[in-house]
Image 1 (tube, one colour):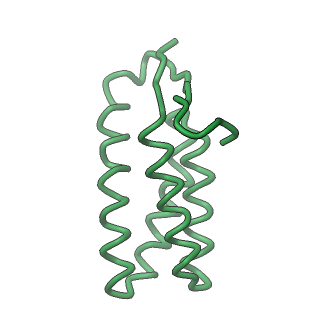
Image 2 (cartoon, rainbow, N blue to C red):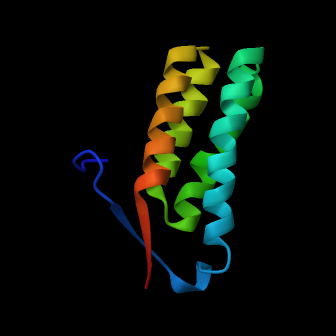
Length: 104
């Protein structure tokens, strides 16, 4: 993610995915809150599963950065590395706030 702070990130998505992308992105926002909750309760195993799912689904929806973040979450949770998980969640939140979807 090589954009200056605050810049929008243009993500080109196949227009066939238009009906499902908003819900997919909303669910990733919800995941951020869930991961924070799991961190507080020691739920690293479930964070690892969530990261694995993001790693697999991001690219399928056209969000390669979500896949990369999912991989970071999965790896950090596996160690376990709470700071690594927090860093990945921060990356995800920033990405979701800045992503601008363009359907092609």
